[in-house]
Image (cartoon, rainbow, N blue to C red; front, side, top):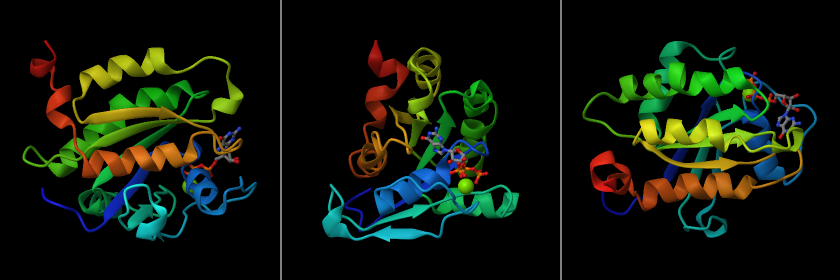
Length: 182
Ligand code: GTP
Ligand code: MG
């Protein structure tokens, strides 16, 4: 793949899991009580990112975008964060019933795009969602990492985007393939 000059991160996931809030919190370093459905695309300059590459962050909203636009954005992205809410079981089930298959179908058999699972709203629960998430990570080799966070209490927000950057710039794909693991 060579050295990338920039990184394009797309956030997907069920409505209301906090995609827009995560982006706005990263930018303003405070939790916005009110957010639009879809954040404007933002570009973080190289010098303030951990890996020193300009990073574009792209939001998705099923209210504002068509399925075709969604597919175009998937094809433009270098990494996709599939966001779920740790207090929303349905948003976890949709990772495997909808989002990961949709991403894989869109990029096709010859394409590969790393996926990061992002469990938002940890401020609302005591227990980690890892028990539900680990089997999903084992099922799909394209899932590079999983991170739990909370936009509301500013927990692990920069980590989300750091893991996404890292998945593009230092892909570990083969390490995760089931054959290599044994
Ligand atoms: P759509 O644009 O409809 O797809 O939703 P979204 O995924 O962009 O979610 P959004 O950022 O609009 O947040 C949905 C609701 O969850 C809002 O009421 C937010 O204030 C709330 N929310 C977002 N992040 C957190 C969080 O970390 N903790 C808590 N408790 N609430 C959150
Ligand atoms: Mg939104």
